[in-house]
Image 1: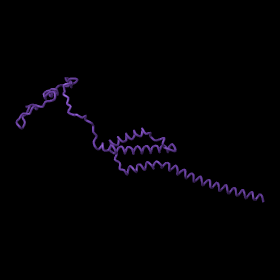
Image 2: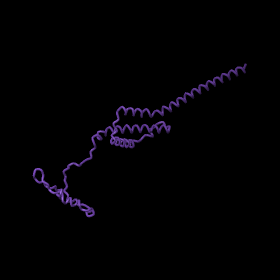
Image 3: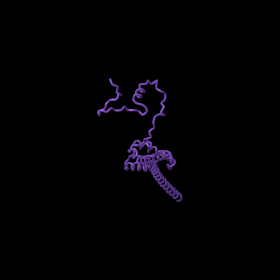
Image 4: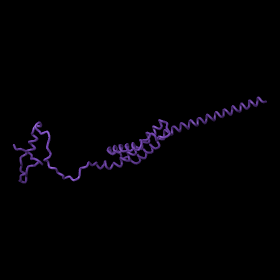
Length: 192
């Protein structure tokens, strides 16, 4: 039985030379592989290995083109998301607190920038940032005017109460006028 590592003649009739590893030949490699693990050295000395500087530029991790192309879209989507959050949540807080303005509940510039960066990275990596312009406009309109709904309901309630109060005042004024005219008639009757 022949050894698979022995030299075999090639089809052209010339013998193929055995493969040589950088520091040893195949026999050394096979001998090392057959060495029991317990007899292996604790560490390997790499000082004798040749260093090849074939690569002139360092290898950089490159992102797939789809992720690079989505970076701008992700940033605009993140900006929309943060604007939505920073408008909607402070308005809800303002409504609950019954405050006049929501400015006190809005995020500061640093927090807003961090949120935008985090959402942009998330959207970019997920690849879900390509929202159609129509959807973006609808979302912005809902945020801009949807947050006014609690204010609208409060104003409607106040207007209904004001109308009810006006009706009550008019009724009471009519009653007072009637009482005054009755009192005037009674005094006129007493004087006669």
